[in-house]
Length: 627
Image 1 (spheres, rainbow, N blue to C red):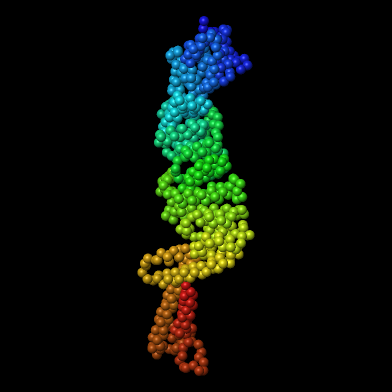
Image 2: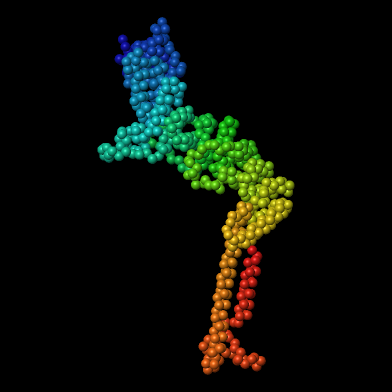
């Protein structure tokens, strides 16, 4: 009576499936235009849904259509084989679909002991939820029936299991762990020749799971990240997973992330197919998913997202949000990542308007977001590296880069420079360099346009080197050159007065130097060198004075010895003996000389020594008085 006992399988004729039972079919089930010619008894005994249809129908042979059957004809064939008592293999790749199909057909234990629904649920709990790889495979296979799977809480249970595995010891995820090879026991211990050594493998990397979850669809990936966030996983790790996922499906990002290395982990037995992703939807989703954090690599990633967003034409809300996120951490941005090309019909090479909006976001932000790492560990953090000064330097370099664009209008240069306050630039050398590059690339500018641009420079904040260059720059308007020369003379006078004042007060007790004088001296490196040279000259002059004093003492001793010898000349044989005794030589005297005069060829008389001393001393004093 029951054809199930005689069933050897199913065969396909055209697009229809037939049972090899040897009995005529009395029920036809249509699934997505595919007909299954079956028998009532095996189906009614296992499927509650088909049983109710048969009870409501008075015909002996009828047709039942299932247009929304989970998994389509292939999954229905699996359920039919189970109803006919044929062997059905449950795997991580088909468990979710079979689970949903069994629920759809109401294949509960009420219609047969150990029915397909209970078998699917047991396999799902015992095999899938306790194994990392199987859980990933099950989630990936659920994309076609995501709504039904969510209704049965299959998706949420898989995501919870994965998030819990990430938070715990990786050696407990399953056996063998593919990342460690096959030499690992179910408890996580290392095996040697099949013997448990007791040594456990410790995972030192926190990003081992990035590659695995990157095979999930966008919706499942977002759900998993949210689950992990509720589990307490650190934001920087979650952002790393998001960045990995984005780089995989947004190829344009990797062109601007060449400075960072990202390891891809592929396992031979873990064969997964990448998800089918709409890049525009992905970018808008990731923008909402990333947290409000600050970091150098994170800012570079945001700028990469902004570039791709401009290419893909995402919503204006998404672009505004990315610009705001970049703006509130502009001080950690780099110049190369800020050079965003103009992808629209604009004549300029770079999107200057976008950068200007980012600057305005920076100025209007309160910088309340926290960094991924403590600021105390950041080697770039110092009192002299305030965010505003960093941004001003960055923007000056940006203007210098875009200034060579021949289509860039002067008002764009001016608006970029004036977007930051005056206090952000201690020196205006960067602005001067940018304008010089712009004038060189735009020789057709009128004198009036050049003067209007030069008004953004404060000539009192130019260094001596910049003033020297500007005073000889033929590209600058004559009026600007005169202003530069005027302020250069003022700086020289101020610096000279400061140097003289410093030398005058060197011998006085040390006291606090006025802040304005200190700033002038520190700012003028060239005059600091002059002061140091002056100090060296002073030391040399003191040494000369000391040497002259020693010579005077020696001459005084010789003079006293001469007097003593003269008084005792009566005891000596002749003046020539006296000269021999003191080491002197007598020369013949002329006719007009007085008898008894003595000429000494050793040390000169006092007058000649003093004359040499005065000559040498006056020469050094004259050179010293210049400073």
